[in-house]
Length: 246
Image (tube, rainbow, N blue to C red; front, side, top):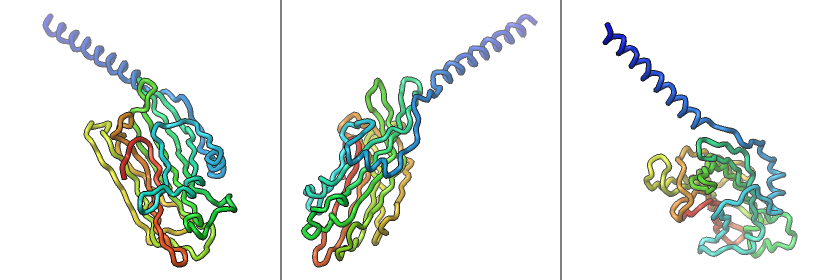
């Protein structure tokens, strides 16, 4: 009888210890909301982009426009701007997870002195939204991913301009947070042609990749092939965070 009672007492102690440990672990992992707001309208985001306002500066943010030879299109780049709005921030254990939207627009519409004939690419506008999630450790951006992308082509001035095709690619490379292994995600899709003013959406379910080194990053690229009267050309518009090669 004594042995049975002793066994019951041990079982109760073990159960209590397990419950105590489980409660402590849950408390440690409990999420604490630090900040939350609604996304701004596109008009507000565009205004912030044009004046260079940013809620946060990621390291190695790039917004580049290049031609088919890999040269930076200078007269288009000077009309290109981006902004970053923080949407949410929460603490989980020792990590801080922050959500942002990065809005990038190549917007030559407000410049009447642009030479549309010498550079037909000035006759259309490209816009990209990138919803990002960043995990900070010790106040350093260590892991990142994009959870949603939107892209849109808008016609500014016909001028004999047509888009032959538009390729919209989401990409992420680097060491995976869950496995530690190097990954290379890519999701290109080509439209023949894209429709003016239509939003194209990508919602990848890829893992976080490490972005505090020279190996990892994520972003989106628009490859736009167009004709204008007798000239043809291709513009590569790239928005990325971290180190990523296309």
